[in-house]
Image (cartoon, rainbow, N blue to C red; front, side, top):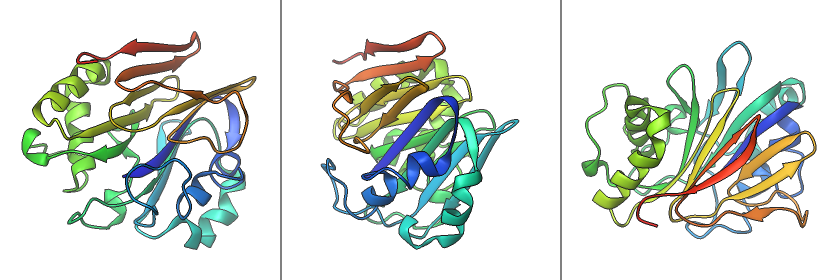
Length: 228
């Protein structure tokens, strides 16, 4: 129910990943090309990056309407960025705290999908009551190294869930594919993971469903999730 993007590599500007590409998150907020669920992503957005810890800029407004971010984004630089534009699940509130990325103080995490909150344990640390925030809190409680097991367990409890997760901690990106699209672009200066390609570069790689993806200094690796 959203589009998200992660970067790990050389220090780059938020603008170069989010605003500048011809089909970047800015364009995906009103005209996504590969979105299976929903047609626009106008219910908020967020950008997180690392600068002596995770920093975030989140809003409940459409990304295309935030001129303040557009003026600052060319100066925000980081070697690890997580960003998302949101299409809210029906009945969920639209508020800044409902927009990804969510954080536990070490990781930045985005959820592209939907999940029944009834299958998740109560999480007092959730930043919002929306399904994505409750899921993020559950993942943080379990620990990021248990991400594969957590997603497989939640998926088994809610067969209709879509559980594409994207998270970074400054030195690693972790992602899952479970019911929605994810693509990888390995550039000379780093790796992009994104719900859909932000340009027509033919080297974008379509990640198969129900896989865990890890990006680190060692490169990119894929592992099939339980239930594949």
